[in-house]
Image 1 (cartoon, protein in one colour):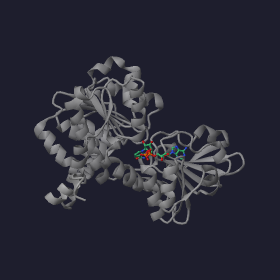
Image 2 (cartoon, rainbow, N blue to C red):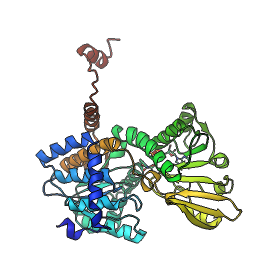
Image 3 (cartoon, protein in one colour):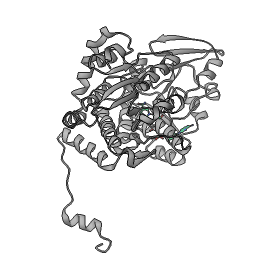
Amino acid sequence: MSSQTNSIVADMSLAPEGHLKIDWVKAHMPVLNRIREQFEQEQPFKGLKVAISLHLEAKTAYLAKVVKAGGAEVAITGSNPLSTQDDVCAALVEDGITVFAKYNPDPKEYKELMIKTLETKPDLIIDDGGDLVTILHAERPELLAQVRGGAEETTTGILRLKALEKEGVLKFPMVAVNDAFCKYLFDNRYGTGQSVWDGINRTTNLVAAGKTVVVVGYGWCGKGVAMRAKGLGANVVVTEIDAIRAVEAYMDGFTVMPMLEAAKVGDIFVTVTGNRDVIRGEHYAVMKNGAILSNAGHFDIEVNKPELEALSNGKRVVRRNIEEYQLKDGRSIYLLAEGRLVNLAAGDGHPAEIMDMTFALQAMSLKYVNEQYEAIGAKVVNVPYDIDEQVARNKLASLGIGIDQLTAEQQAYLDSWAEH
Ligand code: NAI
C-alpha cells in the first residue's frame, strides 16, 4: 500500500514545515528514541498493520514513525477535528505512513476518515478517547476478527472501553495506558497543567494574575490546571462532585464551592471532568459579562453549547479560536476553541518531554498486547508495572539522575513481619 496514493491530507506542500516540527520534538523525546532503537533491531511489528487515532501533531507523528520503525505498516487519523496539524500530516505521508486526516473536517468527514483508517484492516490499534474502537465495534464488525488488541490513551476512552467490556461487547484486549503511573502523574497533571495555560494565554493574550479562575473537576488534569493557575497569580476556585477530591482541593489551598456559586465569581472557566454539561444554562444566567469559557476534557460536551446559543442573539469570532456569544440581556460570554480541548485545539498540546513518557508507554504497551493478546483475552488491562517502571528508569537515565537501591538488610527488613 503506498502512503502517497492512499492518504487523504489537506496540502502536501506543507511537508517541509511538518518535518521540522517532528525533528524538534524527536530531539526532546529520549525515552522514545531508545525504544525506536530497540524496535529497529527487534522488529516487533514486522508484517503487521497498526491503526492509530491520536491528536495528530508532531509528538504523535513521531510515535507513528517509531511504530513503523518496529516493522509495522501504519495508518493514522486524528482524534479531534481541531487538533490535527496539516503540515505534520503531509510530512508523515512523505515518511511512508498512510494518513487520513485534515484540520477541521466536518463531523461526517471526521468519521469517514476514521473509517478509512479502520479499512486498512489493522492487527493492532492505538486509540485516544475510544472513537476508533467504538466505531469499529458498532459499524465495521467484519473487521474485528483481524484485530489482536490495542492501547487506549485517555481517561474518557478507558471509561468507554470498560462500558464495552461490561456489556460483553469488547472483542479484543485493550491496555489502559492512561492508568499507568508514568501517564497520569505527568501527562494529565503536568502536561495538561502547562499546556492548558499555554493555549488560553496565547489565544486570549490576557493576564491570569488577579483573575478568578474556576477549575471544574479536580482529577489528575484539574490538579495540574489549578496548580498552574495559582502559579500565574490567579485566585483559584475548584468545583467537584466527589467529596474526597473536594477535600483534597481545599487542603491544596483552593476555594471549593458549587458551580452555581462559582459561576457568579469566575473570570475564566476551565472544565476538566470527562463529564457532560458541567457548565450549562443555569450557570450562564448568573455569569459576569465577559466571562471566558474553555474546556480541557476529551469531548466538547462539558460546556453546553446549545444552551449557550439559546440564550444568545448571535455569535461572532472576535479572534482566532475565540467566539463571542452575545446574550439577549446584553452580556457577552466568550468560548475558546468551540469548547474543544483548549490545549490541543488552540495550542500544540503537551510538551514533548511529557509525551516522551506517555508515548513510550504506548509503544511498549502495543508490543506487550501483541505478544500477550491470546493470554489476556477481550479485557481492559493495566500497563504491566515493569513497563511503567522501565519508562521511569529510562526517563531518569535521560536526565542523568541516579536513585538509591535497597541494601540486602533493608530488603530483608521490608520483607519480614517479625523483625520490627
Ligand atoms: P479524573 O477522573 O481524574 O478527574 C475527573 C474529575 O472530574 C473527577 O474528580 C470527578 O469527580 C470530577 N467531576 C465529574 N463530574 C463533575 C461535575 N459535574 N462537576 C465537577 N466535577 C466533576 O480524570 P482526568 O484524568 O483528570 O481527565 C479528565 C478529562 O480530561 C477526561 O475527559 C480525559 O480524557 C481528559 N484529558 C485531557 C487531556 C488534555 O490534554 N486536555 C489530557 C488527559 C486527559
